[in-house]
Length: 421
Image 1 (cartoon, rainbow, N blue to C red):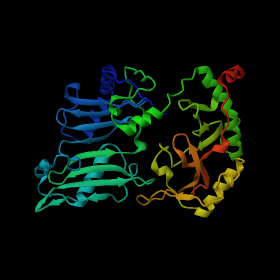
Image 2 (cartoon, one colour; image 1 turned 90 degrees about the vertical axis):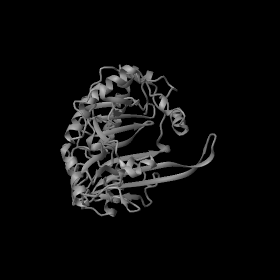
Image 3 (cartoon, rainbow, N blue to C red; image 1 turned 60 degrees about the vertical axis):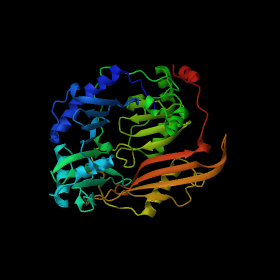
Image 4 (cartoon, rainbow, N blue to C red; image 1 turned 120 degrees about the vertical axis):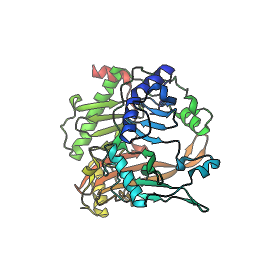
């Protein structure tokens, strides 16, 4: 559940102090023309991330260099002389020059930069062929800048974006978008206060789409320790039954000793239980709606290394669909009721480099005309099932089932606490 904190001067300064050492290390590793260690006096501006649980933000140094810090790591920088971020047309002539690097040399420099940061090519999918934007020509002049991009295998989005100065043979910008790089955030000496319900950060004000989105969000449920405990005790038997039906390799029945974490921020719509085995279960509107095993590929943050997902295609699409349907039937669901008797949408990872990631993501959706207050009759998804099949190990890695017919009334917390005592 998205929520925000009050970004006071004290909190913003504490976050900046916490991330500057990593920004300094990043600059040294890439040999950037920045005096290190970077001090507070070198920071011209800093915009602290206002989202709860997100330690980071954007900072600009007095020499014009910009850095982005997100999810426990520096995920990008830009120098003042970036062609692909240029917004002042009158500055175009200042970028004219001579091209002194080949395309091959530029790609090699980009890969070398990633290695300087301690990242392997496979980790960032840079072992495959990059998309290269060649230096543009404007009349008789040339702008000697290469743009090197690598895509990720799930959706084909850019995960590495680098600008190379082909005249001075220098790195001008680098952006990394890869959940595999996420790390635990640094310790911050000041704990922020949450924004009161209904309030939003200043940067959102005046942006209609964002304002409307924030106004629709409910404040996260603030449950007591007793309520959290009671909810956990209520869901564990259902999780145990679910795991038993799927014959998962986890101890049964699932007890509190097997629980690594419990997230109730989404209650009453959702609570998330993660086990010490790495299995994750979401209890949504009164039933276990989602299950994710370790090393599922189609998730926000993957386990281990990307090499752990490599394998061989040992199942056809038809066989994967049959496995998915058989698994859902083990849970006691009707294929017809979930509209899984129809042909699903099938997605496979894009092949990057020389290795296959043999996974299928199968989607069954059903759209109906429903009446929405204030909007009238509109089309809406009333049933959706998504299943990931590991075609190398021939197992199901994740299941998500959303169907309005499965919604159940939520238990009263006061009664749950009484029963748990």
